[in-house]
Length: 490
Image (cartoon, rainbow, N blue to C red; front, side, top):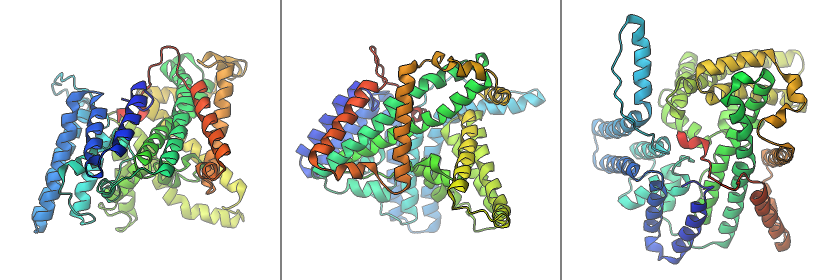
């Protein structure tokens, strides 16, 4: 069940209504049942994996509370990680590992038989596994106490708004809220629904419309010149942002309607002035997870410059693998790791150049150039993220360098990529709305708060206008089939 499906539009109001009608003491049971039903709509069998991860991390938390010796506590953490990562590896990385091993063994004339398992990747497994493992670490570090009620803990792991694509919540935030009483709050419901509207705008109006062009070009890139690939690559940066941020925004809004506060997952990432800043603004729940549970435990930047660079490369390589079992994701992570290292190495030199040339890093011109360069670097890496394989990504980059078919593109070729003139106008207007909203947010002004501060007639005018705009210009179609969110595959 996806957020943009008819089944969810029926499911969510029922969940909200029953949630607030039930006695406060059993609300969490209802949300747990609803969350498992939500997940079972993809494949009921995989709910066993969710239950397994929940049980293992719950028991590890109980064990960490009871045992006192450092050795026993480390053993409890190790068991939790081995079992959870083992399941994640089997379902997500087994085929990739065997293929990679065979590729290496081919050099000496050997190979490893590859069993035909025909195992589908359980939706959201990377998200809920990392969320559950963060609980184990939080209990180990004594940041939180172990949850004694299994069903409350199970809701923390499976809470349906953020179950399959995040944000990856921490026990210090979400588990604490599971143990609280949630009464109906009109202001929270109003704000939550408005947040959801913005998420649907990002997904249905922008991301799904842009996807038509991106899929057309990337699906048959050999038939298009470099100019077309450049346009499609820039549009993919827009697609993946609006698709993923759209899901996170709907999740945050749905949780708020129910009385829960989820962490923000995106903060105007394409207004970043450096790659480091980009990663502080993009998929915040994952980047902060890697910082707290991988980068810092590896030593962070406390053990010298070389160790710091090593740790950065490890984090981004693991981040690439987290996104998928394919060489393209590894290369994407490697590129971002190299960006971070080069940025750190060259920072003193760049500071000296700015000083020597009397350049002001805080000037509008300097920020504009830095922002364009950062976006260009991020977008270059996105090519590997989107391409079918490394060979295809390299071929597209070579084609882009020739900048072929520019005349064809400018003389109407853009209209042959799946969007007619009307849809391109809608997309242009929508992107301008997105840029304006993100720019205001970047400057500390939240459009949502501005709208909610207006008089009743003005607020409702905004609500109704937004609703009808999405209804009219969203990608629905006569035979509407809800398109999955990109990050469901991770």
